Image 1 (cartoon, rainbow, N blue to C red):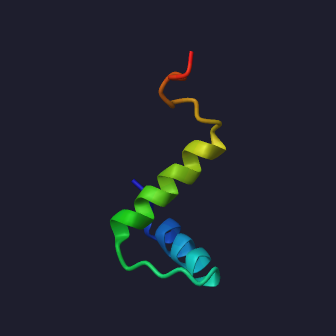
Image 2 (cartoon, helix red, strand yellow):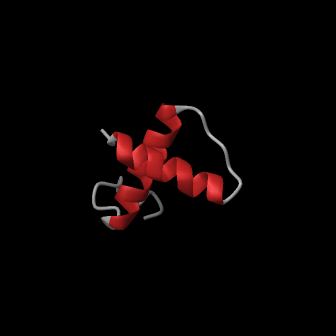
Length: 50
């Protein structure tokens, strides 16, 4: 679960890029997405294109 600071940081980053979001659940989803990308997608589903 993202922290309040992480939400505020994400909100500030979005607003700096002219994107506005009032939904904490959306901010949480973005934070989790970026965290999974930073980890390299270790927990992603296996490639479906095999």
